[in-house]
Structures are given as C-alpha cells and as structure tokens.
Length: 293
Image (cartoon, rainbow, N blue to C red):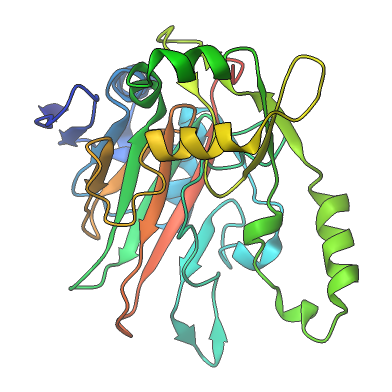
C-alpha cells in the first residue's frame, strides 16, 4: 500500500489516500494499518477500487461487525448489509432511497449503540455537484470557548430520528399520529454523553448534531436551557449555511474511491446535486472492537 496524506488547512486531521490496495487480497495486517490511519486521520480513501457488492461486504467484515440497517427499504437487493442512497429508477422501481443524509449527523446517533466506522462506495457520481461535508467534533470541542466547555461538561445529549425519518411507500395514507407512534416505539430516544473520551485516541469528542440532538440534560436528568444547544451548534459550524466555517471540510470523490471515516468523532452532511443527474452510493457500517465511548 502507498499512502498520501492530505494537506490540512486547519489543525483538524483530515485524510489519507491509499493507493495499491487490493481489497480482494487484503490481509489483517493491512486492515489494522488502515484502522490506525482512520483513528489518527479521520478519513481514509481507498483509491481505484472495483468491487462487487459481495466483495464490498466481505471487506467491511474485515474491519469489524457489519450491521444491517433497520429499515429494509434502504437495503441493496443482493446484499442487505449495504445501505443504498440512489435517485435512479430501474425497471420502474427505485433501489434504496434518494437524497439521504442532507443534514448534519453521525450515523446511528439516534440508536443505543452507534457505529464505529462508516464506509461509502460511490457507484454513480454527478458531474456537477457531489460530495460530503465533515466536521471533526474533537477539533470542534478543542475550539470551544472555555465557558461552553464548562457548560457542556457532564451533560447528556438526547437523540432521536423523528425529525428526519423518511416516509416509506407503506406509510402513504396512514394517519400521521400512527406513524409518529411507530417511530417512537421502533426508535425511542437514545441518550449519550454530550462529551466523551475517544477509546483509541484519548481525545474529547463533543457528541451533538443538528439532525438528531433535540435536548441536553443535566446530572439530575433535567433539561438545560435550549439556548446552550443552539450556541454549541453555532460554535461548531453546523448552522453555517454557507459552509465557509473553518471547521467544515469538503470531501469530494470519484466512482473508484471507497471512503472510510471515524463515526465516533466525525459528523457529516451530504451534498446533493440540484440537477436531475443520476447519483448512487453504497454504505456499510461497522462496529470495531472497542466500546463506542
């Protein structure tokens, strides 16, 4: 394998490109090296990949325990472990779901046990506008004013999927109250430390996101002033609609790239084209051998 480290504009640790990696012949020694690079550089891009869905899943399993997404409408028709984001209509039917992730979030933050790594394999990339924005929430925490660091310490962040739940074909004509009740029963709120220590790097992570964090609570389980959450979202760049905040990193990719990132510390937001260009990407999510926090 040959490594090429990305040039950083800020102190955030963004990116290693890896060349000459053959996923079909990869060894655990290589995988462990890649994991080390992910922990220490946040994003790794495996260049020049050409994998079948089965080969992609097999690669994911080398990184840890692959989890199948809980909603079947996102599943790849051949390999259910692959989450499909696609606006392509095939034989009168959509595979996967279009325009997923167009909001700041960490994958599975709304569940009790979020993932460690996210793998994205773009299959069809628009020519004009496509990519993913990232914020390193360890770097974001380091840049907080001392007052905000003091205020968020020892709080609990409350997360829910309710704001961005995708309506399924089977939900058409259902009463909204029934749908909301099902969402709350299937994915009840999840509670995580608002700050925690990364189990590998030892850095402090600020664990909030615009999409899923709806409340912060103190040690007595009482909600704190909502203004604190808004101030934290603003300080971390998540309310910047121009995406010019120095904490925001834009990652572009091609159809032969396979992107892997640290889901503990990275929140992300998809950049979707406003044109009718076809777009499709395949996601696999993995638990590593460490506790999430």
